[in-house]
Image (tube, rainbow, N blue to C red; front, side, top):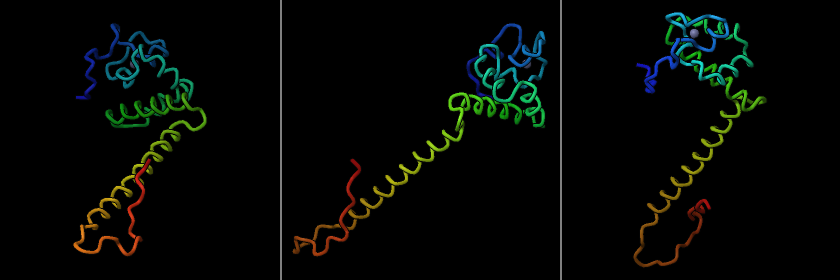
Length: 145
Ligand SMILES: [Zn+2]
């Protein structure tokens, strides 16, 4: 249902996640929200979370979410936030947002250019007698180099 696809479920034999291990539990409870996304092999993700939020705050934050599937999404989001914050301590996720925003702006400019070129070439049908156009105000924009 969740499309994990790697088929190893919890990923470790004794069913213990990083959070439960940190709490010195022997194994995860049946509906442990961290089991799926923070198995022992995702130690780096857990360390990022521990560094940014602290384990007790992490548990508290996820505990405020009522819906079980939303809890999983909350854990995913926190993992991503902690990872990006570890990669870029100053801007964190904002750096990714700014980068994507710049890419979007470039793509928008390119689209505008192509739309204008298309409109120009659609409008410049071959005329029968007059070879040279009288006005050059509708020159096509220069293609991106
Ligand atoms: Zn657990």
